[in-house]
Amino acid sequence: MKNSMIVVASMFATSLAFAHGCPGEMKKIDAALPTAKLSQADASKVQELRAKGEEQHKTGKHSESMATLGEAKKMLGM
Image (cartoon, rainbow, N blue to C red; front, side, top):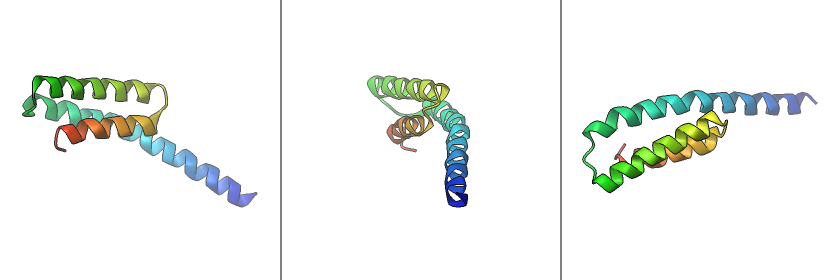
């Protein structure tokens, strides 16, 4: 019983860490996008990924949000 409580607490803490990480990643993307040397198509794709990541964050899908935002950051060379 004690071990299962520890596992549940760890999962909850990890979930919170992802929840607070998403806005920081969005801010990094927002800061890098204006000066990024990307084609118009790539810049649009980054903006779409950023918006998708924000929507995933708002719906509580923090792992998915971090993955989506990571893809946007990769396109930006971050």
